[in-house]
Length: 140
Image (spheres, helix red, strand yellow):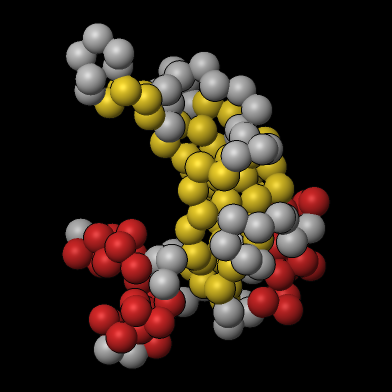
C-alpha cells in the first residue's frame, strides 16, 4: 500500500520520487511496467459526485473514453496503434481497452529502459496521466 501511495504522490515529478525512494532502482520498482510482447490493458475507474448526497459513486454509461501511451505527460499517442477506445465492464464505472503485445514491441522498442505515460481522456480532455516503465521482458 505504501508503494502505491508513493507512486500516486510522486508520479508527476521523477526527481522528487528518486530523492524520496533513495535510488532510481527503487523508484522503477514502484512504477507498473509495460513488458513488450505482452498485451497491455488500460483500466480507468471513473467516478462522479452524487448531487444529492455529495458522495462519490461510479460514473456509468460514459462513451468516447480512450487510453493512449504517450512519450510526454498528457501528450499525444506515440503511434495510433497505441491508442484504444475504452469500454465499460458491466455497469461498474470501470473502463478498459487492450493494446496488443505485437504493437507494443514494434512501437515501444526505442523506449526500453525509459518511462512513457499512460493517458486517459475523452479525446479532448485529459483525465489522468500516469508514468509507466518500459521493459523488454517480464522480470519476477
